[in-house]
Image 1 (cartoon, rainbow, N blue to C red):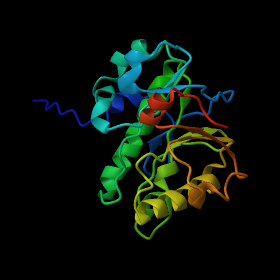
Image 2: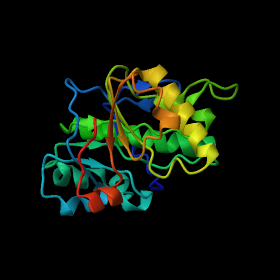
Image 3: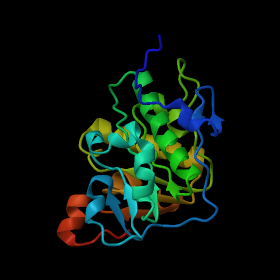
Length: 227
């Protein structure tokens, strides 16, 4: 008897992938050219789009885009009309056990790989949790928040909802420093605020392009990136 359980990892979808590190995280290849989105729109608001030059992003509650993991192929045709995607921002909570944080980072790369395989322009979203995800520790010998990503390319991060507490600001700052050191990105897209206390002395390290969160952009009528 075969027991069929949907574990959300769908290993059959990454048979053609390259893998990174001991944890074998699927690799998202850097694009041949860097394209900076003029406009971005949340996955759950995609039906409101009137501009096919927009990129789809997933900086929203996980339940708003969980279906893309369960049935990834279903959305390949629907999203093809958009200029590209930023890979899903699965939650990586500080107080989650390591296996859960690794699992959601792996899902991020898996979705990115699948869309790349089908000709999409893919910008990797980088999400880290506590220091175990972006530093080498006694128990974890890899900075697994950055596995599957190659240097000197374009990446995206989300700060919306991540700058409220002192602990959040500390991890955002420390993880950002680690990411800039590890990946040396040419461009970093930022969805949400860019507090000077976190970004102020880093603006010469790369090209940051900021996008307002969805609520602010709707109120202000602006989805464009601010360079």
